[in-house]
Image (tube, rainbow, N blue to C red):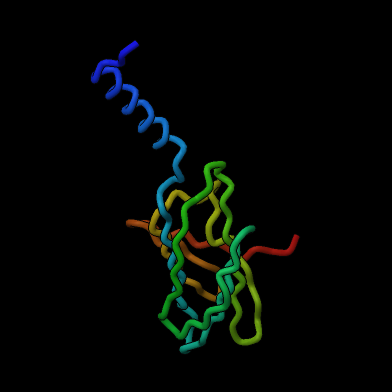
Length: 130
């Protein structure tokens, strides 16, 4: 049986559409800005289940950035410990269940991190060990 060029092209298009459906989702860009007062340095250490992104020292108004693709299961989670003036806090900086941003800009303040989106700022409390 000889496949016509039209059938071959349709099969190729179906394969492309199916492969697009299983490819990793969009890339996410996370930026963490130090917005602590009085020029205080911020130490940030971010991790996921699979990746340790290392420790980064941020001077006031400087930032740390990382990029990733969320997993296909919708369970991607990155959490960060943040330390300054001898105090340690931590926060889930990205979770697939909560975040829809592809450009996730966080301002870290003493009270907690704030997600800055177009015309909207949402501030959160630090996670607790409960």
